[in-house]
Length: 402
Image 1 (cartoon, rainbow, N blue to C red):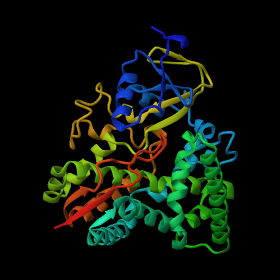
Image 2: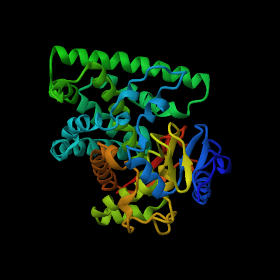
Image 3: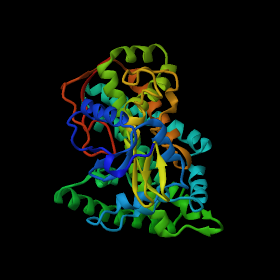
Image 4: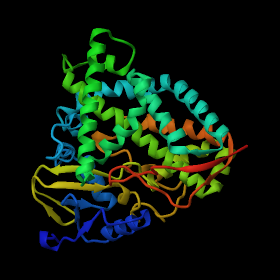
């Protein structure tokens, strides 16, 4: 049975005031017979696992060029991230993907592991020594910030700007006020200016860093243009921090609210990897993905006209009762636990997934080996604003040393 446009229910994604409200809304959307429409995007929206996976994995029917629509709204203008690898479909996508995979592949990750472990140990030791800390700034954000900054060979004195830049870029799809628009426009100008200078400096003198690697690289026998490299950096700088920051933040919050998981980690380091996969499923750092229908398509009985904006709700798909038993329970090691969609699916599966998992694993190892408890200093959790990125904006805790 096909569902006509006028029969589709419309839901406001900005309406929920708590995470419980958001998941209740997702459950209601999953109960619809077909797709839904959502505000503020007006997109055809999939909430069930099967439909979200179909949207993410099929570039023939669902184009990733939707990223340009979402990240270049009229109030913002040109945004280099709109021309990054995330907006590319075949045949342009594979050669660029192969180029970046060299950096994020197993060999590259093996070289990084010692650095990530060293940073994790130093940051965990400093945080535990202080006792009462705001854990996002003291640990969850600083670890991936330092790693991605080092990978790109950027000046450490500029690291303080990265959090503001990353948050502003994550807010682009859901920014609604003139103040938000002005802040994001300013951040895009700052990032363009800074990263253009970095590229020019590396052209004058190549080093042993990712920017230099991109300048040396070739795609189909041709060098990458400065515009291409700038678009990569616009993607990698915030993406290299945000996913891991929120993964660590959501992990620390779960440990604070459920101390038995901390005890299991301390007893067996192998439990940490299972715990991380369940955090990714239960509280994914990236909540949604956009595509554009390349042709008239039908999904779960809903007719989607060619050219329509289509939205896959990852945060809902990961709680789909058709895919996961008892989806609203936090159960590390669950059946199908690694089949979540938190790193995407198909050709755009996150290049940095292995790095994010490694940073989370080594970060948690360093932290839990030093504490017997993580206590929230406030029962109220302040979540990041916006719809795309999910995690605590702040996490004031008391770290109880061993």
